[in-house]
Figure 1 (cartoon, helix red, strand yellow):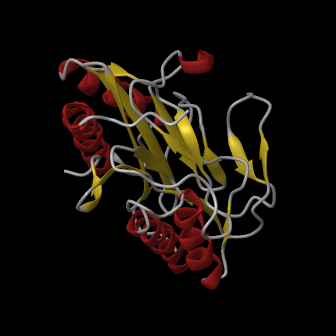
Figure 2 (cartoon, one colour):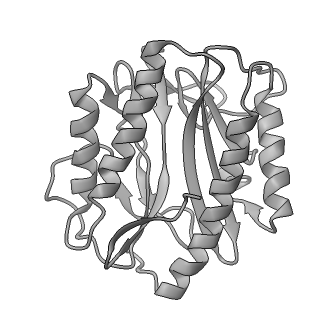
Length: 249
């Protein structure tokens, strides 16, 4: 069931998502060679608590940390570690969410660590652009898979693939609500978009095959061919005036 949000609820979600955006901006600045992924997790959690919010991911389906930190071939759900140091040339995806005043916020960015290769830079640019191609379709009267198709078409036109195994989602009082928002599909299909829907749109783009596998830790998803992957996400409200990105400063 898709839950439509009243204007006052979207106002609350503006705040929860602003907290996410503010913390991700600080984490982005903290990314550098030599920092551990656990230090990033601890910084995210500390900032979250200072703002009076609760880390959304910690404890969700028994996930043990506040932040998902996925490096290079890792697609999503990378586990922070005190032994995992970022290195010059890595790309690192930071996926973070909070629960604040009854509502969730959720967003993700992929960040270069120092100087990265031209190939990695292009992957990041295409993935972030694909997110905005999807958001542009988040308008009253269109369909969920209009978002999906826009993302897939753009990504594949640049020679990359979109992950099938993980998708975007509705969000509100629950972290994951209906509908699912795939990053692939045919336009004109899926639920009709209505004012009051709030969606987490999150293209996960692979340099090679779209296939992924889960590491023995039970969480970390990696590309099957071990080529690079990138991930960008925004929480978006559908309004009478078009899509409004809630998770943007």
